[in-house]
Length: 32
Length: 155
Image 1 (cartoon, chains in turn green, red):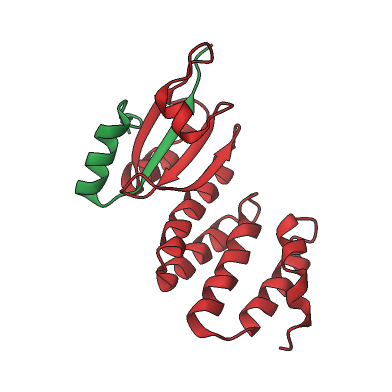
Image 2 (cartoon, rainbow over the protein chains, first blue to last red):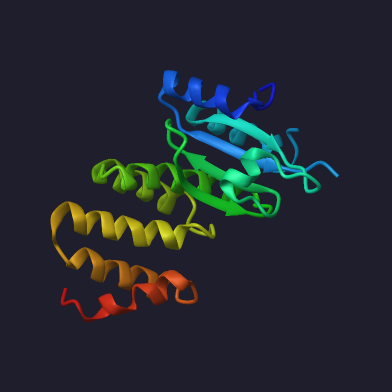
């Protein structure tokens, strides 16, 4: 697999979740 | 981006198939609106939301692969549970219990599965079975202590 195709915008993820019926998995991360 | 458990193809496939994944970068100097909204104080923090964006489950800190699977499965189960879809919740919690018996989230899955069964059947023996399972398999977990009052329910 090519890896996880992460959304960057939460609003976009929610729209896609509504369309697909899938729940949202959100990873809050920090790059140091 | 795809490091740690995310480098595991099984994890990638599970997340892609079961979730809409989103990564939200944090800034400690100036917290983002999403950090403020969800009260994010440390990273990594992981949230599982329903399709309306309502949070049903969160976990904080690095988790190895087996724990990540269990946490994600628990999150899906809690969406069903919170939506009063107890049949689906029971099946989902059972999947977590069977596939990830050693994961940190599993005692909570056992507890919630028993409560969902009780709500579904009104049979209090389900709660007693929760106590039995947790006290036998996970006696040090806080969920075993939470289930202690159910020890008085006759089988």
